[in-house]
Length: 428
Ligand SMILES: [Zn+2]
Ligand SMILES: [Zn+2]
Image 1: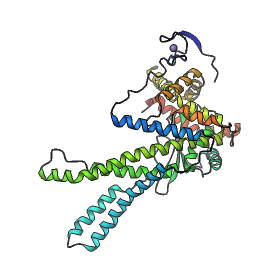
Image 2: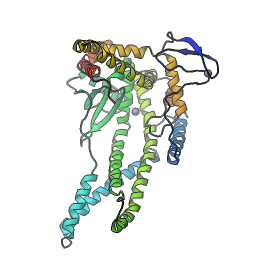
Image 3: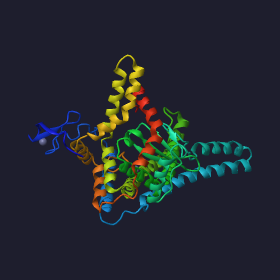
Image 4: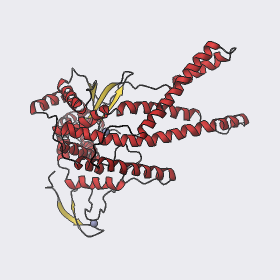
């Protein structure tokens, strides 16, 4: 990205070096990292937090070393991923045992007791059952017939990364892209955040589609779903086993009785946390490799950088929405006019973000290191991994005609989301 807008505007209060700045962005010092991360969240103290951070860092470093060791990173399930699956299946197995026991008690009866206990177990199993989310989206959902060219592109990229295409594509107002499944049969939903999509080059779009489809190809979504539903069941157990507050003598006995299972459930939840953290970090590196295969290494690095400045895009959108509302009284016309050029102005804003802002965010990410709650390894490590080997050429490209046809398919969604953003502002 060109650096033409930068100029030296001051000196660093910490080391006296010259600071290049752009009034739209944080001023910081490249020589000594002064002010490189002013928005760094307060670190919560506490031993559990510290242990988790240390674990996340240790695993992250080991994984990074493996990725850059020269051997290709294969989508093998490491021990932690396998263990997470085993625990998850055991949790669902427990629910299945409740069903069997409930039915058995109903059949045998046990002199009336079974007629009471049986239904109780069946209701419990129903509450704990694995759930399959329906199709839900914050914006319009495009089916194959609505967007044949976009679907064709997704199919082509899917074939490159070794999977099939998707069943639904949702367009939403987030600076993000994601994949998930819905329904009992595990149909595939790809969600494209328009503020991200509109600020990427055609090649970067192919790369990010490669990343997302890579998650399907490597089984992350399927395995993730098994663990997520088990996690939900365990959370429900934990809730049901919660001790009774201000107990009577009998309730105190019940609390004591529930103590061991409660500790066991809590231990399993913590364990699943750790195990899935490791599995998801590996999955992200692998998805990045799929992104580079589909769209080229350069394009994969490009979309990663764009995600890095995601909140700057959100700020720009907020400004757009704010101007629209505090504008003139004839809000109706003003709104329509502003919604009209919204995506073009956002793309222009993204285009003019100076390189020193990208660099600041990379360094801030490096300083923060492996966050415990983050499923993604820090961007500087993901970048380093991509740039480690030979840069890959794109396997899929989009010509002008294809780009235009996809843009036409997205036109309705663009208009609708722009009007919504201008009218209601940026949510969340
Ligand atoms: Zn300095
Ligand atoms: Zn990912």
